[in-house]
Length: 270
Ligand code: DGL
Image 1 (cartoon, rainbow, N blue to C red):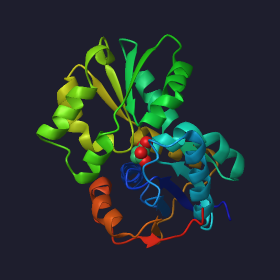
Image 2: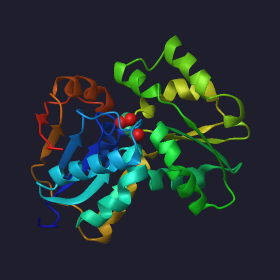
Image 3: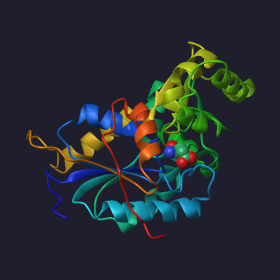
């Protein structure tokens, strides 16, 4: 491990979802080499216990550390909610999750002081967003709602039309949105449903997607350590998966917003 500017940024998620963060990363930091790991053999993380998600996250990080990495992005809300302390303890490089940047952006956005957060059951149950938001502004009122059905809808490409609208209307209702002016999309898959969610919650609610805020945090962390790649040289893009790559490559292109040339299957030997 060289810990120099030419080393790559590692990114992991339970599957394709983290490619929404990857998309923002590639747009903002095109000169950086990247290694992305989607743990497609064990997805979803959102319905699993914190203990199991932490174990999987450490295994993902170990596999990524086989590459020359200078920073790790946990591009999964569920893993960011439960595994950041263990990852920081285990790794010699900076670890950045998606929750704190998303919470900071939401805290800076709300005027009413009422923020709603939607995410997987694991993320919501962990209380990580609630804690991160209150750490920014103690007076905030935080409402939460797990929306597990949004993940398969996004993966199927059912992001617009009657079915996702009805699901969104079922989740995003009642007290959840009373007085709320800011809604955190606390799951990597939800940005794909952005238009449907926006139509259901209405124009008075600003949607916060942590991908861009997370990437800004990455930029800061690299600059603070003088690790930002400033030279235009050949960038490396590796995509790793733990199940066979075909579905990841097909579905992933939608999340990444560009074709995926391929992915290599790795065995984490869990
Ligand atoms: N990537 C997960 C997250 O952001 C969603 C998919 C899953 O449940 O694994 O929470």
